[in-house]
Amino acid sequence: MTRPKDLDPSSNPRALLGAELRHARERARLSQEALGAPLFVSGSFIGQLEAGTRRMHLEYAVHFDETLGTGGFFARNCRALAKSKYPDHFAEAAEAEAVATSIRQYTTLLIPGLLQTKAYAEEVFRAYHPTAPDDTIDADVTARLDRAHLLDNPTTPLFWAVIDEAALKRRVGGGSVMAEALQHVAGLVRRHRIIAQVLPFAAGAHASMAGTLKLMEFTDAPPLCFVEGPDMGKLVDDPATIARHALMLNLLQATALSPRDSLALIDSVAQDYEHGEQHP
Image (cartoon, rainbow, N blue to C red; front, side, top):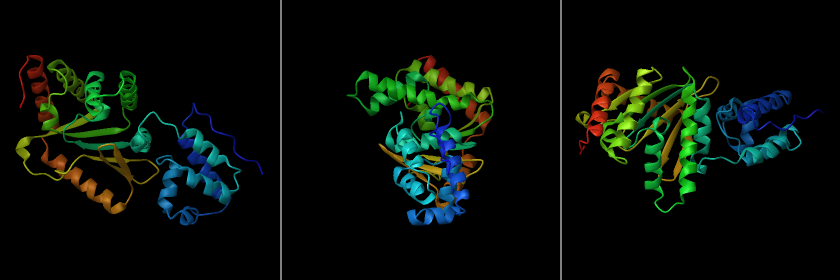
């Protein structure tokens, strides 16, 4: 039997690994549910692996090789692809983000990572890790800015951010850092690359008082949400949780200022920072 060749790291390796998994599974005449059952994962999870929206972990790869007779192909490539420039708790989310067709996100105290400038990101990472060497901070900032290149595509993904007013008013770095950061967000809006809404303090209690939300949708796989905390994070595909997070985001979008009024507020706050005014 001819076995697949090892993947080229310069290509899109996770998508190729998923395509090989689908090919091997269909050749073995197994359903997604049958392949996933011994691992106690759903057929939809196997579908997400095949679509390249989820990372293949080594224990799964070993099982696939044994079940599908692929001669260690999946385990070998899984080990090769395991290294990531992102922290372990975020690596899988960053990979999913890169192939999403739609990303909706609510942030409370920070400008979303994909929208951050270099200076703003440096302040954030230095606050997270006050004793880290400069090269560690530089690597973190570079990884964050590299992620933002997915917005270089003029249409995909659709990125819709709801940003709490607190993120605009929290002074991260000096006034010049904040002015540049907010002008960058405004520029993306004006170029019609993102949709941004501000959730004002006047909105009072809202649907996501407890924290941030991120919901990602894909062409050939079910949606995922990313639940994040300090130095931890988890991708969730449970349909009930996805539905709840989608509803929460819908409520936030309905409660937030319109995109036009949001842009006006972002511009106003940026000008205040430029002119040296303090925000509470």
